[in-house]
Length: 144
Image (tube, rainbow, N blue to C red; front, side, top):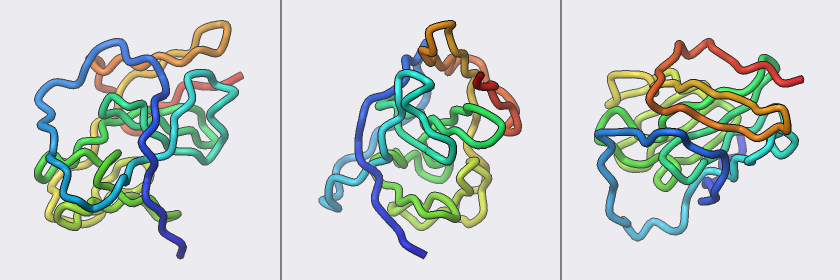
């Protein structure tokens, strides 16, 4: 299974910031980061998972768009910087926690899954994420 480090990029508009997310100092581990999340639906292909640049990950699967925090639930390391993405999920390089591509906790020391947020798509395809509205991890925003 091929692993790759995320690339730090800017994507969707975030309507409200995530509170309580501590930032991590650079550990010298390289640029790291999650691939770009598009700002428009046409820029987010099915199967993608990307960073919005605001400690939020934006993904798209067969069901539609979803957004979740990029802050590891163990020690608040930013997965968009200290995470590694593979076909099977996300690994936190800080302390080894693991999550599925949907944010489900699969390996400790993290004890909780990543929180998901409301995603809206405007008529022109522009994506916005409301980080003040937590939704179930199964919620998807349909894409026409």
